[in-house]
Structure formats: C-alpha cells, structure tokens
Length: 321
Ligand code: XMP
Figure 1: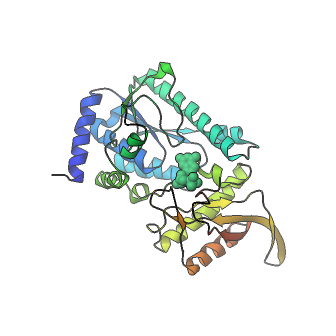
Figure 2: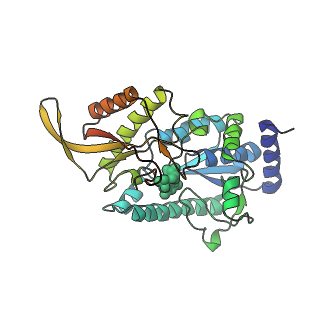
C-alpha cells in the first residue's frame, strides 16, 4: 500500500543500495527540493553525507539561519557553509542588466560550489552528488539517465571532467506535493517544507538598479515586513509568491515627519498561480496592504512609497527582472 512512510522507507533502502559505504555531497539552496533530498540521504547514510550551503549574500532575512540552525537541528546533517557574500558583491558591482546579473551569479555560484566539491572529494573521497531533481524535471529534460550536471536553481552547466560524481536523485519519481509530504514525514520544519518559490539569483533580480550592500539591506528589511504581515494575515497558502521589488534607480518626493524626503519606491507583487507559467495578481485585502505599507514606510527610512503591481502574467512576468 502506498503511504508517505513507505516512500521514505523505499528511498532510504535504494539510497543505501546505490551509495554502499561511499560518501555524498549535497548543495543546499534553502529551498524545499534540496532540503528533502538531503534529509532522505542523511536518513540513509548519516554522517557520510556532507551538505554545502553557499551564502551568496542575496538571500532574504533569516534564510541562512533557517538552513544552519533549523535544518541542521531537524536532520543532524553535516553542514559546510561557504560565506561568499563579498565575492558575489564584488562580481556584481556596477551591474544593472538582469541577464548579466543572472550570468554572473550562475558563474560565481558554480565556481564556489565546485571548489567546495573539489575539497571534499580530495579530503574525504566523496563520490556521489545528491540532487533534488523532481519527476517534472526528469520529464522535461527527456527522461534520460542522469549525467553529472548540477541542475541547481541557476540551471548552470556541468562539473568539469576531473570532478566526476555519480548522481543520487531520490526525488526523481515524485511531484512537488509528494516532496512536501516526504519532508513533513522526515520532520523538516514547515518554514522549509512550505516555502514559496524563490529565484536562485535571489534578491539581485529584485533590485532594479545596482546590487550593493546598501540596496540589499533596504530590500531585505522591506521584504521581511511584507512576509511577516502576509503570514500574520494567514495568506501564505493563497499566495504563490510575493516578490518585493526595490526600484533603486527611481526616486520620488515624499513627506515624513516635518521634512521632505526623496526616497525609493518598493513594489509588492503578490501573485496566485498553479505552476508559475501564468499568474494572476492576488487580491490581498486592503487592510493587510495598509499594514504592510505603513510599516515599510515607518520602519525603512530609505523607502517613502509602496506600490502594488496589478498585472497578470502574461503580459507581466512574476519577477520584475
Ligand atoms: P517569471 O518572472 O519568469 O518567473 O514569471 C517564473 C518563476 O520562476 C522564478 N524565477 C527564477 N528562478 N532562477 C530561478 O531559479 C531565475 O533566474 C528565475 N527567474 C524567475 C520566479 O520566482 C517564478 O517563481
């Protein structure tokens, strides 16, 4: 009989059979797929799995803690964090073009992960690479057997030839909703299992303008308030995702206290969707929007205007970049 517990049991047995007494590495993004894949492999081979988390500095408030504290507490997994924040900021300095940002982030990400993989391979003899590939990904890519591509959230290319890994893909027969159930079964926190989609390039493609420490700080603060209020209003399951976008290149005049301000707008982009291919703007209740707007303009000094995006997809995309 088909139960979530039996999926876990079967997968754990399959992982043990294929990895034997080998060692594995898994890149964590903070998202649900890599977390559940890692938790399954951890259940199967314990300490012989090492997870690598690259902090590129483009995450939202609290996301690094979610991985380092909550995920580790729930699974007991071995975790290596690579703090690459400066490296990414340096590489992104002065860049405003969206595709250029994506290219740079993808390139730096693969370099950093590759180095971590190389270190683990030589120091500890790691031979297996865990990936959170889902069934829809398998179908989309033609269903062939896995080659050692890192299909990370950046869809970057393969690892270099001297870094061959054998792939472990414990989720390749599952759909997203099943992955979430497996995550719950494995005791992962709700915040990870039910996390809304978040793009690999992170906040970098939600800053219209230059990605720098200052702009990131502003956006992180505004985003964190919006998320807090939407969650408090019980809207998390109605909203597919809600990008908060900082228009760093735009300034407008405002008035705050007894002074004139010349600050930046942020855009709220709450959308409802089934699969992100099409989307509609979510009719968030006015009182919730009001709380978000009041708090952001009160608590984030650089922001003096909050606007709502009421465009469906198409013609708009979900993200602004
Ligand atoms: P758009 O903006 O194209 O987004 O309507 C559709 C979905 O994809 C996410 N997205 C990305 N995810 N790397 C990712 O991993 C990216 O470069 C990227 N761009 C958009 C977006 O958040 C939405 O869920």
